[in-house]
Structures are given as structure tokens and as C-alpha cells.
Length: 256
Image (tube, rainbow, N blue to C red; front, side, top):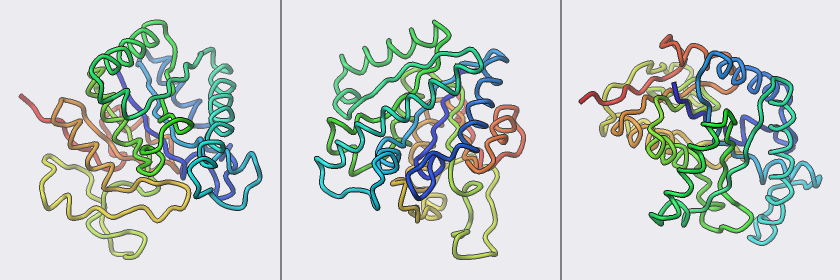
């Protein structure tokens, strides 16, 4: 299968902005194993600003735009270096692909972007895609790599999108506030009742929430891509997501 995996800042890093090494090493090992099985892997990875904060020993995420971009420039180096080093241990190379909103909205630039990913996959390389926070402004404030992952899935006709979250999936209530919340394991149709269940993320490191994941799932399932929301604290569940077993919340693709 052609699989896109999106991982966010709150999963990749600690509150200090330092890399969560235990998660990261296991994450890259699992994806390498999946690639060994014959699947194609695309990673959509946040984390540039968060890692920049840690690298520069800042006490908090910057609020001024130019400073955000400077911190992102530092953090992006740390991010891609970490991926390159981790996957090299399993014999794989990575390719850094940075995009802005304009790259996706302009037809010609989007076509070039898609062609690049296709060629990288053809060469057996793992593309690591992120919003280009060093030059963009809207993407930093929106911080929605879930949407970016959905755009990529549509562009390259991905079979599956796996969204790593800080919870097990979509619940009928907010699991951070209600201990009686129940996990919804399967969603056949994303209707108004599903949208009403979405809540924002409470994480200071990440900028997305469940609403962005549902929007991404809606776009993907309508274009033929299955979506699974998995708890990033248990990256081994990626295996279950791919094999069709219980892994979190599975959004079924629409059948023709």
C-alpha cells in the first residue's frame, strides 16, 4: 500500500522542545519494517518550531513572526537530521520536502510538488514533508499539517492516511475531561453528528486538534483513502492500522 503517516509536534517532542527519543526511534524502526514489507511510506512531520525552541534553550514558543521563522529554520535542521540518522540505521534514505500554501493552491506548482514525491517514492526514498515555516506566515498560525497530509493523499492517490494523535482516537466525549468517554472505533460517514464531537487540542506544543483530523478524514475518505487516527504514544498500533485490526478510530473510505 501507499501510506501517508502524519506526526505532530506534541508526539515528536516533550514540553521542553527536546526530541522524544524513545518514541522517535521506535517510530522510525516501525516505518522501516513496514517499508521492508513492500509498502511505500510518506511522512508528514511537524516539529520544526518545537525542536528549535529546544535547540536554542528557549523557555517558550516565540510569538513574534520573524522569531518564529528563525526558530523554525534551526529546528528544521534538527528535525531532518534526526530522520536521516534514524532511517539510515535501517538502510533507507529520506528526502526533505518543504511546502507553502501557495505551492498547493497554484496548479502548476502543485503538479511539480506531486511529481517530486512520486519520483522520490519510485527511488525507494522516504519523503519527509513539512510546511515551510521559515518563509510562510499563514501556515505558522494555522499549523494544520493534517490538512497538508490530506492534500498529499489526494494528490498521490494514497491507500491510507494514519494520523498520530495524543488520544486513542475519536471519542463521544472529551477524554481529557470525562472519564466515561467511549472510543468510536469505526466511522462510515462523517456527518454533522461526527463533526459535533470534535474538540481542540489542549497541547501547547501542537497547534492542531481533533477537528483538523476529522476535516482531513472527510477529504480523504471522499477521494478513496482510508484514514485511521492512532495514539502516537503507542506507535506499534500502526501495524494494526495497516492490517485492518483495531488501532484507534478508522474512517472508512467511500465506495463507488
